[in-house]
Amino acid sequence: MGGNAYLYAHARRGMFLALWNAHVGDEVFVSTPDGLALKYVVREIHPRVAPEDTSWIDPTPTERLTLQTSTGPSRSDPRFVVIATPA
Image 1 (tube, rainbow, N blue to C red):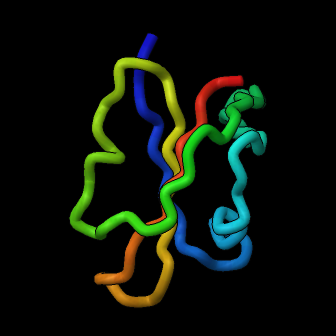
Image 2 (image 1 turned 90 degrees about the horizontal axis):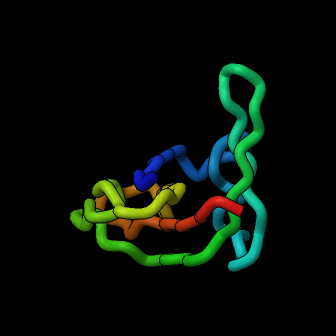
């Protein structure tokens, strides 16, 4: 089963500010509404993605989790993207 779950949050405390500290191999947990905890492992980090590059939200042939945040306050600032796959 494939698919790309994409989550975005601002780089603020309590949101995705800590994403800047991600490392390959880190574990990511996503809680579902029914209380299930889905476990992923960080596989790729892309710290300077151009704002117009929206390919990160495209469907994928394999399951993955894409996390994205900003690197600055301007709309033209690069994006910070982390790719994780099921553990």
